[in-house]
Image (cartoon, rainbow, N blue to C red; front, side, top):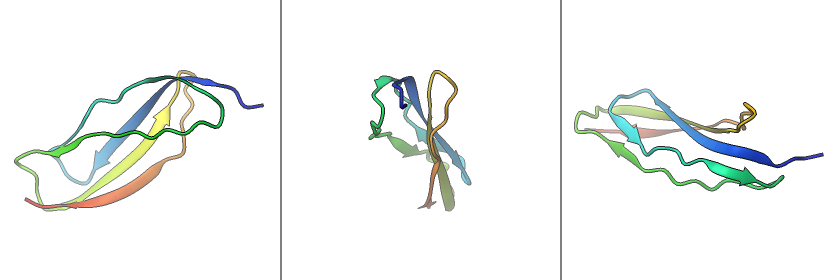
Length: 79
């Protein structure tokens, strides 16, 4: 049967370009079985950003080492 999870942390990794910054993750202390996460992060590009594609990989981890499904998307960058 489903159980509650604790200390869920959203993880956002970026590849493909440098000079992109993401706000720090906030830990969600407790989630009921079947709950969903809606999470907002601030993404900023530095002055040295180059033209290309930023590839985002988003998932969540919990205190037991569990990992959620990965979600991937790409966004174009330009100077």
